[in-house]
Image (cartoon, rainbow, N blue to C red; front, side, top):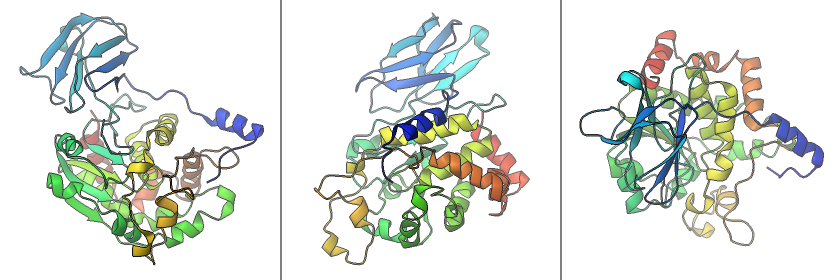
Length: 348
């Protein structure tokens, strides 16, 4: 995908940018020892730091009745912690966690929780995580991920990608590993067509087995699900959009979340150092390994040459071809009962 170069395209891009995502509060890491809590509600709340999403006697109360919109909290990067905001009388509670996990050598690894749906529910934390490839995770990274209760790793990548950078996370945490074999060659050929417009159209057919596996594991609710491709932005972005859309998150929020990948990717950690001569028949190395000068490729904005979001175009395509995300998933065999269980599992 080439970068947008004209003033007109930049204007179109700006106009297409979505509004702020719907979150009750956010938790952003400042350094290895502290995070910053941000919330818009000025009502006084008790602020608790917890090892899980449930408030209990073992949790630490940081503030009894804070009205501050910003609070710095002592939470180490090595610990997966949750901030629980408790309203008056203990009736209203909001759980907040770091969306972006502070991995040393991960790329685009995020929790999908925390967004508010159109009907007022909140996507639960620690049910599903999205990521780029993970071939270079450190021991500290595995220690942090080991705190997430991961029961499933769904690899959306092709045979060629898995050959070069096989997953290790499932072995490290004892999770079920799921992958469906396919070649990346047809997808790479498609990416060179259509002048960069409607790039995802038709990919939902090629990736039907992968999406089916992912939703089955989410519905089964047997531990947290980690799903990923190589960059964690296109195939993983499509999968995440389907999840959010079915759960009822508004599309402006979904598109905003999708475009976070540009800043959150760290391509240098998405592929190990390999010699292409060792994989003479593998077509992905030229694209994924490095640019011509040997440096890792940079993440480019996920917009078409005309300035449209790839995901916005994909949503329009799904609506026209299938009648929406849920209707598409029905072609994969999912039913009303499946969607009801998914929402019960993943929404507060």
